[in-house]
Image (cartoon, rainbow over all chains, first blue to last red; front, side):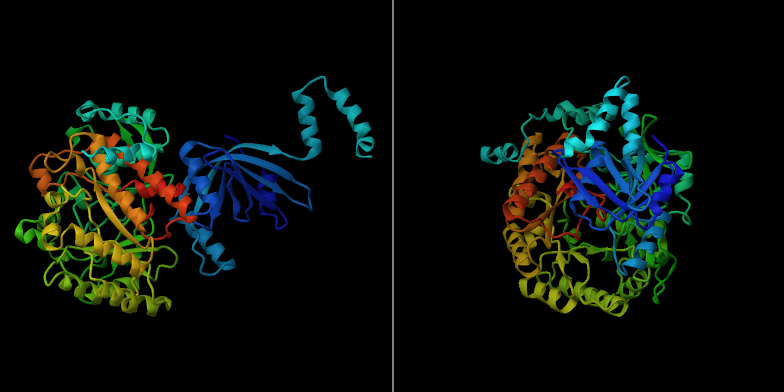
Length: 162
Length: 455
């Protein structure tokens, strides 16, 4: 299990942030969709409200909880440029109780009368900063001794594009 | 048995050989469960557990029962249809919810089992309920909050929690007529405990329990239920069969009941057609049209219970004598014309095909093939097949003759085949059956609609 740093939780709540959910089906085929209804519950849990009971994402979420398949949530904020990927596993399908009541009430302010399928609670397994400079440093750490080659490649960038 | 019927298994993806039924008899629960997990990895673990729980039942530790029996904190069901237990301990039978849900949303009916049968146990550990086996924590369990209408009474003085009972998740069950006329002549279905159980419940529950609710009781209760915004999405009405005047008596009563519900829906939500599923005898076509056009009914489930032509009259003599299998099927197909493809369902009581001979078959694949033939017939004709896992209820004929449950492997093979029948249907038709009638949310008795979540 991983914990979600405060700045990522804040990025989730930022109105400009784009949120994407990736699931896979039984054949391993990925399904990636923009989902506004992804929220942080605490530093170990993300909530995802699914609106449609029988859609591909919902079927993949069921498949994920049954067969322990990992899902991924990516967020990007075009204003702050914050970009993160969170890997997780759905662990609970919620249709009543305080969590359900809270999200249903919030959703119905935007979409009166909507009957969502459920709220999924997702345990956070891994958090990755997807910012380019951050990833570059991570790759340098992961492959020590590569820094001179990467530096050289940096200098060749313009030529490659030409 | 007809070999072409047995071939249906391989046609629908059941290729591994089954063990002999005797292989499983007397096996310890844990061993059977683990062998099934290994042999059928395509069936989710919680679905295997659910099938097993519905067959053999569960018990509570003292601390778990002390917690769950708090009626202010948890929904306690009225159990107004069948007892749904394999034991009759009156206190425990009524002071528990109707169902638990696993974390994945799979609901299962709490059926109290006989502890001598190596059954599962519900424990309460660190503020949470857990399903356990031999002390090992298997799955976390979730309960439903007590519905607010449970504290209300109808103007006739009946507690609303005995008019409509909260089934799991988002569904309410109404059973306004708790007497099956087939019992009057000894022709009740051989797995059924309805009339026996009603007597027992009258004794235990006393005056607060009534065997018949009026349409007015239903109207008032539904109006109260609809006040809770956003929670309830499935409504089901069922009850004992009444074949008098070729089932016209049954029709007349339920038509009035549906009109009462429709009035509540119109007044509360302004809609004419209700998400109401009728689980009743198959009525005549003109009666079904009347239900659809004048009472807002959209979905219908005239359950055949047993498909096999030879076993049907043995297991369901009341249905066989009063209407007959052919007419039952004909009217079910008429219903598809009235309500539309997929808006009609028919259930099989799965497991009774392995009841002692002559009621059932001795081996797993003969029993699976018998049920599968019915499932395929129904799907080919636009009827959604539903499964209710058989439990041997005290008071039922099968209990009296010492029948016992089918091996878990029977349920796995039937589930795989059923799933593939529906998958083929979706592929051939380019669409799936409509959603919203019997499904994993509202029905805690079978496993077919759980794996339907992947379709």
